Image (cartoon, rainbow over all chains, first blue to last red):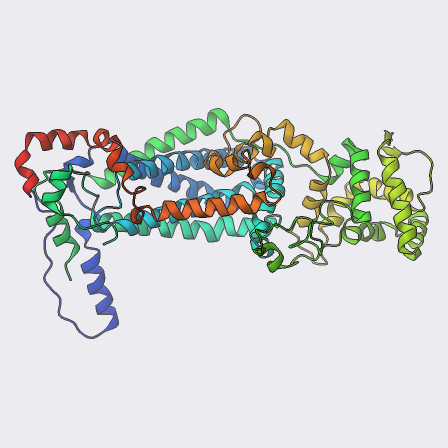
Length: 223
Length: 323
């Protein structure tokens, strides 16, 4: 097998926090893991593409969202270019969720949390939930009939939990601010963390036959 | 402490590697997904059914508007009696036994539908309008039983009301100043003035639509528009979009509970559904730690399809199993 990485020369501790942080990052996030040029051959499956496409769809969502945010929430209703940018935003969101769901089911049936990758799965689920909330706040920021109806009906579910006292879905200003700033930062940060987790440990090995697995004795999930 | 590169070398020992250009794959995926997205955007555009305004509502269905406004004045509308976080009522408080987070969170908005939706806007509109000013004075100086009698009688009469030239006509009766109040409110609404008055917060800028959205939600006209666009809860509207566009299909599970007993008949359905989804989400997040849930992928041979090349290689190289 070709080696996946080479050992950097150990750096002596100099007592500074900055040096300690650098050594920690170098140890935990070696560049040859972040940007590998070789992978185990079993990654040659379409299922590994789902997550990549989800990330690229997210890039299109954020990019089109930045343009929509720059020109303001009313722009796309009165401008043909704005409507086109909104259409990109709309279809990118559809593509994003389609591939996120495929990615989620694919990883489930691969049991990708095995061999110490439980936290990667956990963060992935949190990303999914954060994306749902982002989509929801986006739908009620549309300033059209759909937004009105969704806000009026969704309020009851939010209010039933008590959250309506501080998360008012009928307050466009609050929902729009959360949608265009707070949640994109949260989702993007979590996606970066999720990718780093994947790259740090590498993709999970295929599920082995029981006899093979007994010989290899992998660590349990969450170890 | 072991380093990741050591872990991966041990972890993948015995498995061949292949060249894999991560950034190239990312760029290709970005371009291909962009082509698909832009093609869909150009071909199908995106949904944008115009929002309903108070003005459009009052012009299209004056009887529904006046009926709703009367219920706001009488304190009998859905929003008037809603409870936290909008009013001091209690009709919409949901609880499971002693667990009532909606009640615990309290009234954050402090909405008074009679004052905020009817009397306040009319007071502004009464400048230079002696009939309206007089009607407001009469209404304000009457005692509660007298007002209630006017409102009850007018509400009953509205059941048989008709719209005539943009006004609402009811059978003659003892309604006090209520018909004058409602005729003026309807006039302000039809002119577009009420859209602005309901947003007035004492500040120059306004982005909080709690008032007008609750007011419109109390009427029947908006629900009719939503039904035409198949957005009602009974139409799985939560995951639908206006027109023929895809909506939030990813909310199918959330929407499904509302169609099934006991959720579809429970008075606390929203709280039950939210709690159900919270528990299911927690289970999803904790799958790696939950026996059976974490074992299903081993039992269902989908992984054999995903990694079919690996298993073929494994059969051809049985000696690698000892690594």
